[in-house]
Length: 143
Image 1 (cartoon, helix red, strand yellow):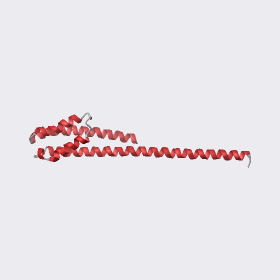
Image 2 (image 1 turned 90 degrees about the vertical axis):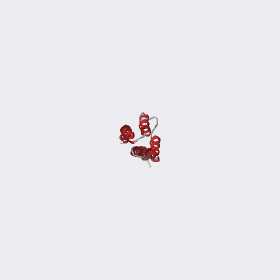
Image 3 (image 1 turned 180 degrees about the horizontal axis):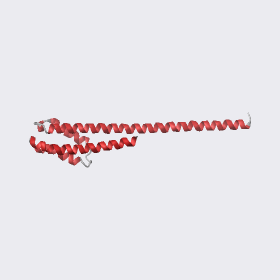
Image 4 (image 1 turned 45 degrees about the vertical axis):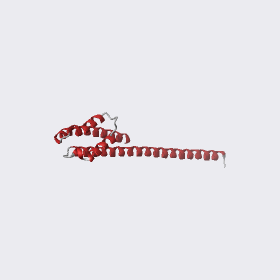
């Protein structure tokens, strides 16, 4: 084998090795990006489920709170506690939500509880809308 053939074989070998390394890097990078994207999608799914759970608890609380036997219904307190546990107490709207929820308990009679309905629904809608916007932003960052 001549010196030129040996040099050619070495160059081809180096180029092949570099090709394998580049392909492995691209594959690992793609895998890393796929894992990162999958994690972001999972977080978005968890956030969507959390929003759904919060909406369900809010609607159940409101439905019971305006009912005739609201204060005697243990589900009122169960759903109220669920809302408090689902919410972040550091959320800027938490105090408004808490006041709206406890207003039902302080109102006592049914006409008084009906007056509490609009403020509770309004703050609930605001919170759910804000969280939906956060979710949409997360989904935009993923695409």
